[in-house]
Length: 398
Image 1: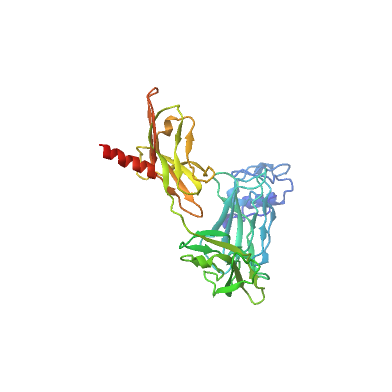
Image 2: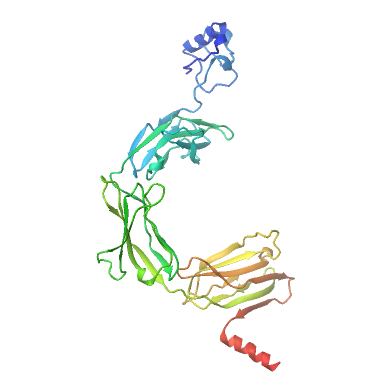
């Protein structure tokens, strides 16, 4: 239905004004989607006015009215919240914007933009798992009806927060395995401001033993809720079970995270004892790219890049990534069952040792295609003491 008439001052006592009043009083007027140029009036004595310019007298209702929209919300910090925004027709895209309650800013900040949920594409609701202090403010749901149209906004929803009844953690420490002397980070971040952070430690062999208070400090970060602890160089005596405790608002209870295991290991130097050299093979053949290490590795990776790249900043393409095979976990060899034209290039075997973050690379292997029928070469390097001895012996014979 048309519920409002808006006229410029110069038209308020004209025939057009009378026509607009009649339209407003009409109970049989079409109240659906109206063309921007004209209004069609049905079953009324004002039929001579069946085509009136809308720009002069009628303000149309919002194209997509909301069937369900969240009202103002009051929640404790750290609690979940569902902000509803369901529309009576399908929409192209959803958007939620935010702005502070007591601050005037030029443009609200776009927090989320996404496709509507459901088969009917009418649900633009969002859920916040844990409300944070900085999320207090005015939230507005907007919808885009068509691909190139602007967003139509609903009435804003004001989210007001009060101090938490129970302190919660948005980040907790996790089990990690770190090489001796390497840096490490145990995360511990609360949902609200913290007055004090405490870390306890106990040995791995005595998990039931009472924890020893080893660190006590003030929280850091913009909202004073970060209690994470960083180790610049992990030592063997720091191996154990670590727990974070946060002391928050006077009215909130003291909260502790589950214990996290910090394991320290002695890093082992990884050496490649076997890896393929340059290979010449015809397309359609099969070949095994050899890669064997001197000690156990967690993960193998084979990358490829063209021999003559079109750009200097070419990133190698990861072709395969898999756990090392064999009883001792040292074999990272990779087999090409059918060599294709696009396989010609530089192949590199990389391995990641136990507890390591970075991959270690073997010398590259160049794979070149030859004409069918040409004998192919599939040499590989053997970096063993026996191989070095044989190489030196051959030099002596010469």
